[in-house]
Image 1 (cartoon, rainbow, N blue to C red):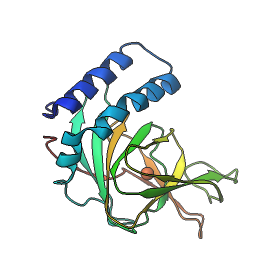
Image 2 (spheres, rainbow, N blue to C red):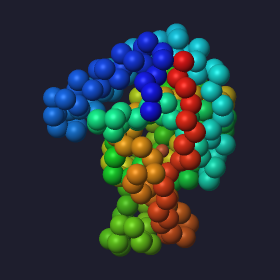
Image 3 (cartoon, rainbow, N blue to C red):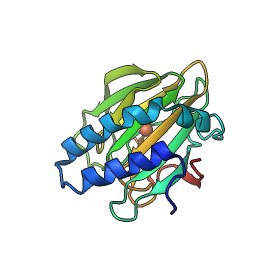
Image 4 (cartoon, protein in one colour):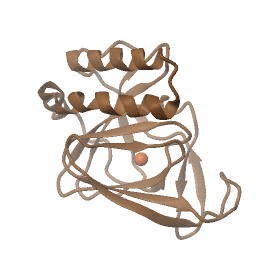
Length: 198
Ligand SMILES: [Fe+2]
């Protein structure tokens, strides 16, 4: 896949690659990528580009992601979502890979859950306890650790987010959780729509 054409995104790719090359502990690596993401999210050229992106998330279960870039050496990817106002996703995880979810425009609320059952991880039945709920706005980055269970709620207007994932969706399994029935479903994550970042 070709590199993004937006200069600020090209710089961000170079920063992430140099961090990966240092063989850092994953917690340190993703904390540093999160800091490097700040200037990207604030960049006017990215904001302008995001206004041309198509709607990708209208609520559960129809979730798509734009795919801008996949790194040929380290495997991290750049995705984006345009979330419909007031939409609510399923309760889910992003598999066992890191995700940084950076808001460009709009407001969202992120709910966090933890399992209170001792059943098999992929089989359940699951029991969930809500352990957090935080609001994010433009420039904020929600760091989703491997396996972290969460749910995104759209705000009063459509919201745009730039996402860095450690691996491309479809190369690992993700889970959705039904709080009422305890059912766990494995899936390949969002449908990817290749898109030029320019
Ligand atoms: Fe998510």
